[in-house]
Image 1 (cartoon, helix red, strand yellow):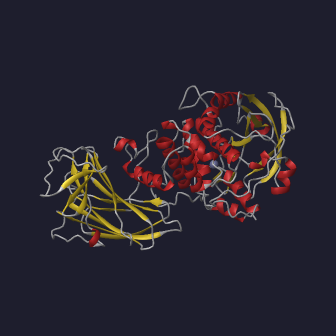
Image 2 (cartoon, rainbow, N blue to C red):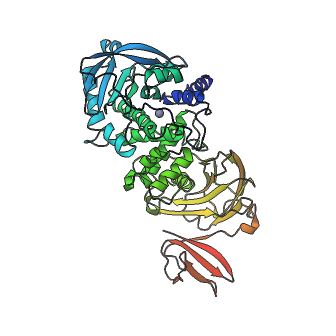
Image 3 (cartoon, rainbow, N blue to C red):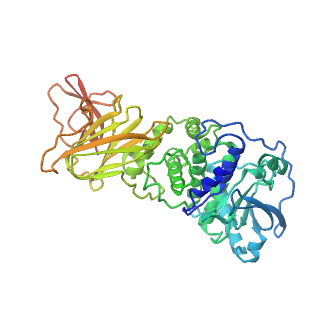
Length: 536
Ligand SMILES: [Zn+2]
């Protein structure tokens, strides 16, 4: 019954972090016969039973009041509950701080810690001197439940959560507490504390450090998600919880995912790379389409009764935005390599995070070259080409795949960027030429993104250029018929059109050919059409 939870933990034991919530998520779906809980279930299964008429079982705690509560021993799997005595050490506008008496007696948590935790939860954060965790989470994600105890304050429960085979749990939220004890015991075999609470580790890390408060924001984020959609996929749920850490101002450090971006966005294994993957995705949504531009997109995704990709799509629809998951996936994959908001109206970068460089899946500076790779679904990667003149890139995906392929040429010194789609034919092949790649584009990337929903697919690529090899190799492109790629030129360069040729803007206007603004144009001559990209 708990084998999956064991596997989940065992496979991530070498990672530094972090959240114990998925352990209970896996149990929930296993018990309910809904599969393993990490998959892409598509639609929300039948919601959990909820307490219909909340009846507070106890009054709010007063400072100094001791309570006997159920804690989890996370050093064994499945976790085993035990009863412990905790005392209320502080109350704020939005939270109670409950500390395990043995931790308090040992001096692991003291009154200065409690004062700082209250301040950061209620009033201030590293990002914002006048708002704390409560404000950021409830403004961006949504409201917490108040079903079980009829008390809007959240209990922050501090104890030594422990570790399992080297995997330390920094905190967790468990849905059992949202049910009456009898219901929780009957359905899952765990006791409920019958309050809105999160469990936070207080040892060996200082519980009042900002990073520890950010973890409180993360776990509180899981509680808010549950209030709207109890079956949300872990990749969405963890991504929003990671965003809560950024909103507070102390997000997880970025590593892992940027070294191996060939990693299905919708797959959750609990690895460190998965936290960072879903964090960057959620932050990108927030910055490009969410709170940074004044919409409630993130809340609308949290609040959607649909899960995973369908939940993201319905969140965009509810926000009145035309974009959908697959569009934004490509934009995000491109943003991770372009990573600079000073280009193209800021669509391809991050405003509030320094994202380190993404690794390349191939890197070349002599030609011709060819290579083969495979790519996970809902993932992208980067093949870099440097030097060479008149670079020609060919792409050929597996015939039944669904790749989207892009070319990015970047000149950071001259501040030029070319981004273009490589048109693929019905057999997933296409090519593109990058004229001018010798004149200052330090790097040109082939960027495939896989939209084939059923798994990993193969692709091949080629690149040819002149001016590097002593021989003058012919371009090796998989499908010569589709070899006509766009012509790329710099703004301000003089255009000489063949006689009879005409130039049109993308909205169909005939363009005077004297000086072209940066943008995309269509060149028509002798019944043929060719794309002209004018780089800034
Ligand atoms: Zn989490």
